Image (tube, rainbow, N blue to C red):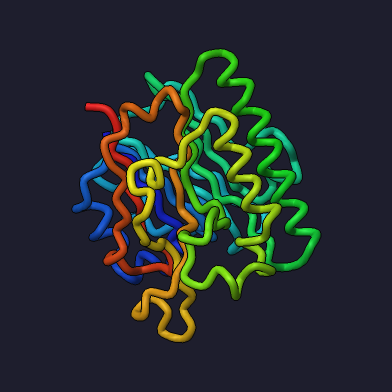
Amino acid sequence: MKITTWNVNGIRAAVNKGFVDWAKTYDKDILCLQEIKAFPEQIPEEALKLDDHIVHINSAKRPGYSGVASYFKKEPLEIRYGLGVEKFDEEGRVIRSKHDNFFLYNIYFPNGQRGQDRVDFKLDFYDFLLDECNELHKKGEKIIITGDFNTAHTPIDLANPKENEKTSGFLPEEREMISKYLRSGFKDAYRELYPDKIEYTWWTYRFGARRRNIGWRLDYYLVSDSLMNEVNDVVILGDVEGSDHCPVTLIIGE
């Protein structure tokens, strides 16, 4: 199975940059998009029908903001939008789908760069989600969390760690949240497979950062410990443009 995640930074803009052609030709079973910035009726028709994949959309209440979409080759056993908490759910950040062997979370984690209140909101979001995942793990369920985590976990995950120690996305308390997940039954699938590899998934549009490969790894697959032995690869598609993020694919199972 191939699961691909991509923060498209506005699905309408991505369509204008070739998203549909890429998505129709790229082999995938599930496609998870973040930051779609659109209500369902605003999404171009061609972006709603990708090789007859079934699409589920969770938009933010605020126009042109946040939002996630999940495309499935096979209809999931169950779909849930949000976390059941209004302050999180009004921002359209989560689609949870249930499959034969795991729960899949498609998530656009909050960005904390607008001030301390948003950092606190982001940390609360991480904590609430982890509590839910802990309950699922207690029941013996397996979980994959993917999307834009808006956090680089360790210095190897961004080009300029020293310069960003006080920048949201690399604050100690944000990084500790990723560590907390890894102590709670999850593996960072990419880093498990490639402990020393330097690749990024996001580059600012400024300063020619992508051309110079001055980036951050913000897009992850956190996989239950019990599921990690089924992971075959995690591929960062750094040559795919159309957003300030690039797609990342998890290859799992047969």
